[in-house]
Image 1 (cartoon, rainbow, N blue to C red):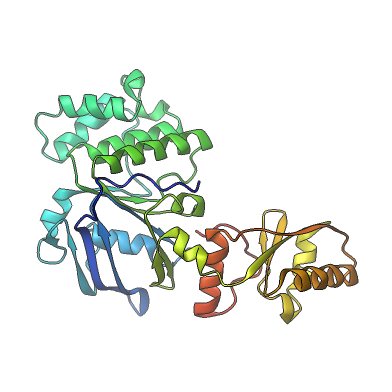
Image 2 (cartoon, helix red, strand yellow):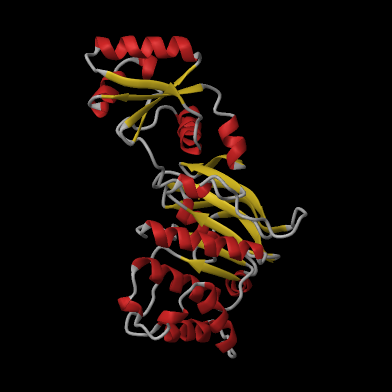
Length: 329
C-alpha cells in the first residue's frame, strides 16, 4: 500500500483541525504531552505509535469526549474547549467500541443514529450511504448477523449520517478480514474526494502509508510528523534483510552484541541497518556463521515506513523492546 489517497481539489486546503500544546494527565500519568499539529481540509492524517503512546487519548480529546488538562484545538472553526457542543455536532467519531444494535437491521441502525444526531429527513442520506458502503443488499439484515467487515461499514455509515466535515477513526480495521479492510479503504478514498477530512489511529503502517501525513507518537509526544515518503527518506542508513535458519534464535543471539543492537525481526526475516552494504554483508555473514546459524541470503532492501518508525523511536528514547519486531500498535 504505497499510493496516497486522492486529495480533494488541486490547492492546499485551509486547516480543518489545528491543535496547540494539547495535554492530558490521568492522575500523575502524562498520557498526552504538548501535542501540536494541523490537518488540511480533505486530507488524512494517521496517528501511529505503540500501545500507550497517546493516540486514543488524543482522539478522545479532539472529539470532546475528554477535556484537555491544558492546551486547545480548533476543530472546523470551533474552539475545542469553549465550543465543545458545536465540535461534537460537526464531527463524526468511530471509536474502537462503536455500539451497533444487533437486534436492529442495517436500515434501523442508521435511522437510530440519524435520530441521535437530529437528522429529521434522513431517508435520502441513508440511501446514499447504503450505496456508498455497498450495504444496500443487506439493509434488512440484523446487525448482529453481519460479518466483522460489514459491521465496520455500517458503523461508518452511522458515523456519516449527519454529513460531518471531519471524522475521527480509532483503529477502524483492527480485526477485519483483508478483503473488508481493502473495501473500507476504498470507501475512505471516496470520502476524501468529497472533501471530508479524516484523522485515524491505526496499528497498520501499510495503512499509514496511504495517508497524506503521518504523526509518529511515543510516550504521549509526537516525535515526527511528515509525509510517509519524507519519513522514509530520512532513515539514514542502508538496510540489509537476512534470511537464515531459526531466524528468531539468530536474532536473539545477534542482540547480545552491541554491533547489531539496531537489528529487528520482521516476520521470519531480520532487518539490519548498516553504514556500508558490502562490509555489512560480509560482517553479518561471518557473525552468523560464528554463532552457528546457516545463512540462506543477505540482500539490500529499501527501508519501509515501519523501519523508519522503529528508528525514530530508538533515536528519541533508546532501544525498542528487542522481543517485539514488526507492526506498531
